[in-house]
Image 1: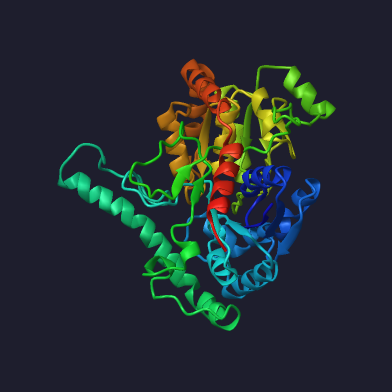
Image 2: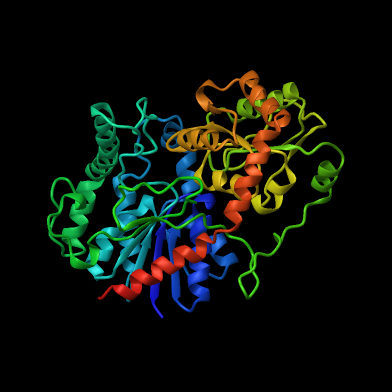
Length: 439
């Protein structure tokens, strides 16, 4: 069996699919270690997963002025030069004896560690990062011109879409190039890379030619582009769900406290509102908008403060319940619909548990996931945090409460997703690459 390391940083939501994959690899006999943000430690210990903490608590980073600016969509750098150097050093120290390295999109610098140690690399991504002409990188605006049909405008649009991926990669590389080039020379004894980074190499190391990029997304949600490289694939959503010895999914191991159980039982099925790890400058105002929108729409609401401490400044009405923490796998089957930020993990969870939703997007790929939910027919609208109003949100809540088409479509998608096993598909692809690679 192989010694597999995974490097990942981010929030608990970012970690969830990777935990599911690592635990399945461990169950299959591999020696697995998570090299991750220090805020992952509790989750790793909960699942008895060997863990190496990386410097930089992501919770603290997101609550900093830089983190707040990032959430507002400003072009700031969350990982400083100093922190990047520490991340590289700590991760490299944990690489001895590694047979295969897995990395998340925020840790693509693991490429250099894989090059130095001679181990193969696999990228695991919850969002599409392989270049395609079908759509631009998800942080870019939606294409105003269809890529279907024929003609010069279509060809131009497809070229621009593909170029957006290269541009993102190049900008990120130039941002980090000085630190990484110095690290390659001083610590890894590797030659410097070209100005354009690894993507500009004419002859990459044999073990790093087109490493697999496994997208943890259901093909029911995002059809696989035909122009993707052969090294890219959709392996399906990966959920951290309790399973029996034979792999069957078990009910969530969670018991609601008395107050939550009473709230769920005493009235119409409520809506859920929560924004996970998102941080905003005025969380009280955001919470007030949630409560006011629910009141205007005449729906009950469960509000989860999350990392952003989104708690109302006003007194809570009787039909609003403040919930500190609860697994989506337990809560989502018990709510009518969700209001969320459009993160890849929460978006996947709403689909997995068959509930419609509306997105209040903060930044990055979130507006694109909101538009995806609209395209799938499970969301009436996508909102931007910067322009959100109680009435606009209330309009979406009325649509979700009154139009059965959204819930019907969500339940149809749920049935399709339940036939998939993203964890098994991903692990199979990882093991196939491991078996086909030579050190």
